[in-house]
Amino acid sequence: DQQVKQNSPSLSVQEGRISILNCDYTNSMFDYFLWYKKYPAEGPTFLISISSIKDKNEDGRFTVFLNKSAKHLSLHIVPSQPGDSAVYFCAASTFNAGGTSYGKLTFGQGTILTVHP
Amino acid sequence: DARVTQTPRHKVTEMGQEVTMRCQPILGHNTVFWYRQTMMQGLELLAYFRNRAPLDDSGMPKDRFSAEMPDATLATLKIQPSEPRDSAVYFCASGYREDRNQPQHFGDGTRLSIL
Figure (tube, rainbow over the protein chains, first blue to last red):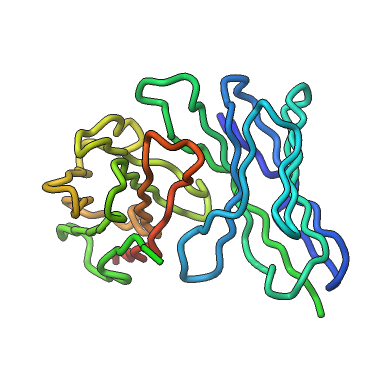
């Protein structure tokens, strides 16, 4: 049972345009969401996060939107740059649940973003 | 920048051999996670530790896998005996439990190939 889903395996965007990566989740206990970026032969690196008490968080060119009722979040990259080409992973956690689940991340399958010059 | 260090970066060995992967978490981090990445399963959590104590290893095949933290600067993941289906990239990550705003930091992984 996949609790975090990224239904688009890949996305291709022209440089300067907006990239929108989507993520859906099924577990209503998730209260903290993160996006990681991964280049080949490297570990995932943290990009941006959002708590369930917010619906938007912005950091430079990156904005994450959370729609709790739809159990959906999205990452917007504006403007997209060729250096943004990587695999993007959505992850979710249950910080408020406490106990042994605190801090555990459940990842989506990833979306390969290619930004063309 | 502080980094999570994993060794070895690559390991090729024959089926049946013991494999040990090592991880040095970021100094001051009190939680350590082991993940496995495969094409089929994506990134899946194998085990995690808090203050060196194992908290959850439900994602790990217990008959052949074991995870330990001999001290605060070293986490190990062992596979004995190894099988071809264990071929994957294994990532270690560390974090600080008390600060939810501080995300997990990942190492660059150990790429394991079992022949």
